[in-house]
Image 1: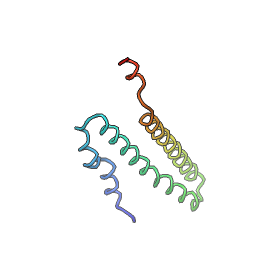
Image 2: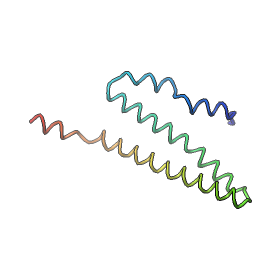
Image 3: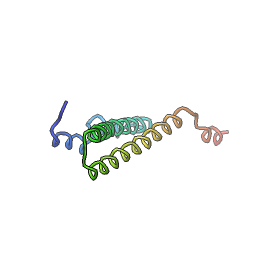
Image 4: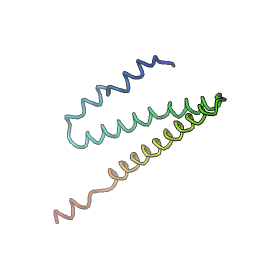
Length: 105
Protein backbone atom coordinates (compact mmCIF):
# COMPACT_ATOMS: atom_id res chain seq x y z
CA UNK A 1 0.00 0.00 0.00
CA UNK A 2 1.30 3.44 -0.91
CA UNK A 3 1.87 5.99 1.83
CA UNK A 4 2.43 9.68 1.30
CA UNK A 5 6.13 10.66 1.51
CA UNK A 6 5.49 12.95 4.51
CA UNK A 7 3.94 10.01 6.38
CA UNK A 8 6.94 7.82 5.57
CA UNK A 9 9.32 10.57 6.67
CA UNK A 10 7.44 11.04 9.94
CA UNK A 11 7.64 7.32 10.72
CA UNK A 12 11.37 7.16 10.06
CA UNK A 13 12.27 10.34 11.94
CA UNK A 14 10.57 9.47 15.22
CA UNK A 15 11.06 6.13 16.96
CA UNK A 16 7.97 4.20 17.86
CA UNK A 17 6.82 4.74 21.45
CA UNK A 18 7.18 1.05 22.24
CA UNK A 19 10.93 1.22 21.63
CA UNK A 20 11.37 4.36 23.72
CA UNK A 21 9.46 2.86 26.68
CA UNK A 22 12.02 0.07 27.14
CA UNK A 23 14.96 2.41 27.77
CA UNK A 24 14.28 2.65 31.51
CA UNK A 25 14.63 -1.14 31.93
CA UNK A 26 17.70 -3.24 32.82
CA UNK A 27 20.47 -4.23 30.40
CA UNK A 28 18.63 -7.28 29.04
CA UNK A 29 15.78 -5.07 27.92
CA UNK A 30 18.28 -2.69 26.32
CA UNK A 31 19.52 -5.62 24.25
CA UNK A 32 15.93 -6.40 23.29
CA UNK A 33 15.42 -2.78 22.24
CA UNK A 34 18.61 -2.89 20.19
CA UNK A 35 17.46 -6.14 18.57
CA UNK A 36 14.13 -4.53 17.72
CA UNK A 37 15.81 -1.45 16.28
CA UNK A 38 18.09 -3.58 14.12
CA UNK A 39 15.00 -5.47 12.91
CA UNK A 40 13.28 -2.15 12.11
CA UNK A 41 16.38 -1.01 10.20
CA UNK A 42 16.40 -4.23 8.18
CA UNK A 43 12.73 -3.66 7.35
CA UNK A 44 13.46 -0.10 6.23
CA UNK A 45 16.19 -1.32 3.87
CA UNK A 46 13.91 -3.78 2.09
CA UNK A 47 11.76 -1.24 0.20
CA UNK A 48 14.88 0.69 -0.84
CA UNK A 49 16.26 -2.46 -2.44
CA UNK A 50 12.94 -3.52 -3.95
CA UNK A 51 12.09 -0.13 -5.44
CA UNK A 52 15.62 0.37 -6.79
CA UNK A 53 15.46 -3.03 -8.50
CA UNK A 54 11.98 -2.30 -9.83
CA UNK A 55 13.11 1.06 -11.21
CA UNK A 56 16.16 -0.57 -12.81
CA UNK A 57 13.89 -2.92 -14.76
CA UNK A 58 11.98 -0.02 -16.29
CA UNK A 59 14.65 2.64 -16.61
CA UNK A 60 16.34 3.45 -19.90
CA UNK A 61 18.43 6.50 -18.96
CA UNK A 62 22.06 5.38 -18.44
CA UNK A 63 22.79 8.06 -15.83
CA UNK A 64 19.70 7.16 -13.79
CA UNK A 65 20.58 3.46 -14.11
CA UNK A 66 24.03 4.22 -12.64
CA UNK A 67 22.44 6.02 -9.68
CA UNK A 68 19.89 3.25 -9.12
CA UNK A 69 22.66 0.63 -9.18
CA UNK A 70 24.54 2.61 -6.51
CA UNK A 71 21.38 2.85 -4.39
CA UNK A 72 20.71 -0.87 -4.76
CA UNK A 73 24.33 -1.83 -4.02
CA UNK A 74 24.48 0.40 -0.93
CA UNK A 75 21.20 -0.97 0.40
CA UNK A 76 22.41 -4.54 -0.14
CA UNK A 77 25.70 -3.78 1.65
CA UNK A 78 23.76 -2.21 4.54
CA UNK A 79 21.53 -5.29 4.68
CA UNK A 80 24.61 -7.51 4.97
CA UNK A 81 25.96 -5.33 7.80
CA UNK A 82 22.61 -5.50 9.62
CA UNK A 83 22.62 -9.28 9.19
CA UNK A 84 26.14 -9.48 10.64
CA UNK A 85 25.09 -7.37 13.62
CA UNK A 86 22.08 -9.62 14.17
CA UNK A 87 24.31 -12.70 13.98
CA UNK A 88 26.81 -11.15 16.41
CA UNK A 89 23.97 -10.42 18.85
CA UNK A 90 22.72 -14.00 18.64
CA UNK A 91 26.21 -15.39 19.22
CA UNK A 92 26.74 -13.08 22.18
CA UNK A 93 23.49 -14.06 23.92
CA UNK A 94 23.79 -17.79 23.20
CA UNK A 95 27.25 -18.26 24.74
CA UNK A 96 27.71 -17.97 28.51
CA UNK A 97 29.96 -15.22 29.81
CA UNK A 98 33.02 -17.14 30.92
CA UNK A 99 34.90 -14.03 32.03
CA UNK A 100 32.44 -13.52 34.92
CA UNK A 101 32.65 -17.19 35.91
CA UNK A 102 36.46 -17.14 35.89
CA UNK A 103 36.63 -13.99 38.04
CA UNK A 104 34.34 -15.50 40.67
CA UNK A 105 36.52 -18.63 41.10
